[in-house]
Amino acid sequence: MSRSRGLLASLLIAAFVLTAAEDYALGPDSERHADVPKGAVTKYSWTSKIYPGTVRDYWVYVPAQYKPDKAACVMIFQDGGGYIAEDGSWRVPVVFDNLIHKHEMPVTIGIFINPGVLPAHSAEQQGRYNRSFEYDGLGDRYARFLIEEILPEVAK
Image (cartoon, rainbow, N blue to C red; front, top):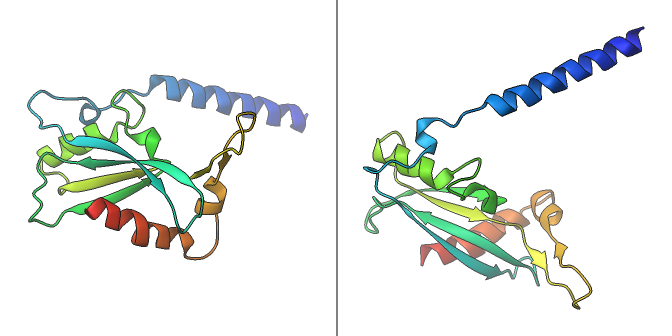
């Protein structure tokens, strides 16, 4: 009896979660507005020395209000490629544009970094994803990667 109650409860919770996900509507800050200046998103590729042999894509968002002679905030997104699409689930550049324009957040440069990939050795193989080594590893290696490699490159 308690097993069937547990199963029923699990099914009800799953149905509620799926229904809630379908009903979610993006807010106005996730939509592009004609009067809001649009920041620039530029894609780059980086070959790491701290994670030897890995190559990764990263994107840098610079808001239209950025002035090189004034300090700006920086926000770094891991698994960054998923956050930059204007029609995606997160739409971070659009949200940043809107919030910066309304002075609800400071001028902020976004750095969107994908985990590294070790290229395949042949056409029959796939590259090896380095995500777990980078994000789950103990120690300072990922912090050093950001501080010593990515941030100085973006600062150029």
